[in-house]
Image (tube, rainbow over all chains, first blue to last red; front, side, top):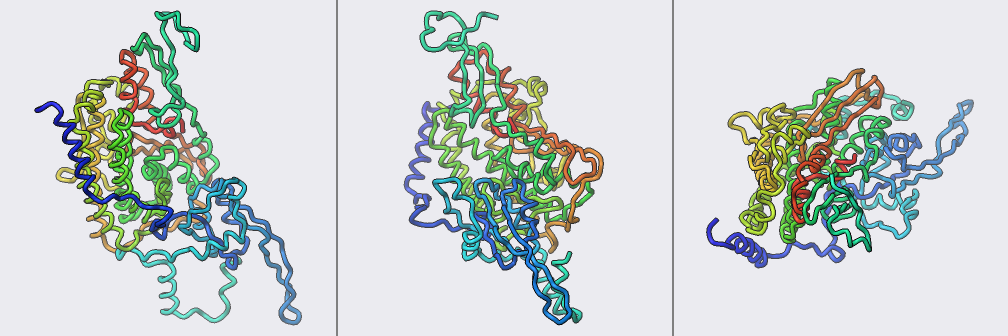
Length: 183
Length: 385
């Protein structure tokens, strides 16, 4: 064991060494933390992309997404054409007091209407205030960062691969945009 | 046995009777809400009974009404210090049932993240255990190191605790550019700074006096109670699933000449358990380094497989067990071909590790109780599920 108290002295030496170094404390409210783009802070809604397909609300493990909508009939655009109905979003709200921040809704959304934002400063004194309605969710869109570039060993991002394919083989004529929605 | 008496205010005259003492459910050393019912004879513990269930959330029942992606959300929460390792058990079970093979890149990335998660978990206990014994300083060092690793975990997964990064067939997303370099850097920083933590504790006379020879757990008790993980290995039970029934890339890492080795001790006391944890951190850091090198050398490829729109496990059953930071974590998955499991039994390490307290606490002094309790390294959520 050696000299009695050697272990204690060794510990004090560590403390002393650390004392001479710069502190690693972050001065949080004064200096905001530098968060990576993938941080799951709050969910933002891009309303224009939402088609009220309800996939996010259904896939949510604790059902904290509330969606109300109604159907609207659009008159035919051409003479003798068919009337079209479309879904109109009335309410889109996420209850962040229930949310488990798993991101399944964002993964499930086929139309890229939901995004993660690293913002986290939305604590409330009243728990009911944690239900963010569509206007508040839309405001978070400004804080959504672009996704980080991927590792060189990674497979090409879906979007880039699709774009490359489109350039290589031009799409056949005709409107193909409706297909995704019909599926 | 002798008569028992619950002592309250004004019952002081029966000084010779045994006293029933409740430790917890609210007690700083119980990491949450574990309750111990202890019968005391003076300062000596005659009888101890862990009473669990205060944090029971019915995880297994909830699994039955969730699809396999939603289960990952719940499964990473019972043991909040080893979220990644918990997710892993679920996805491995489902992958085995469905016959989905995760790409090589995902296998190595998972191994790397699992080892980083192990270091994070162990650092927590390396900091909190001395804290319970009265040494306040080490926890700050442990958390400084944790922060370094959490930064890289957050960068890849977006979460600091509940990573939610495993998916059936691989990982959610590929690594961000430059992440491997930053991870290697973080691992190097933690390895270098571990000397600080060790300098504070290893050889410290007070720490040794509180832990050496205290709460000796025999190998027979380990087998009898199904104790696993670093606690079992500290009692000389040389069993580690990473080597003995390898999953992910562990077969290669634990092969002769590889960086993996199983840390064991023979004393079985609190000090041995602590030393096991400490050495495992070093092994895990080595494993993480090996994984980083390996991922960097892998050819370009996907990190997950395309899943069918509705993922159903075929009818049947499987048992997937993994070496979690705290011990053996097992998922017994029974499927009737639905998109939700018919039953998903969870075997968590902490539950068994805590039960053995009833055997090793009696005969010890109350003052040693915290020292023994803390050295069992459990997470109450993992006990109560």
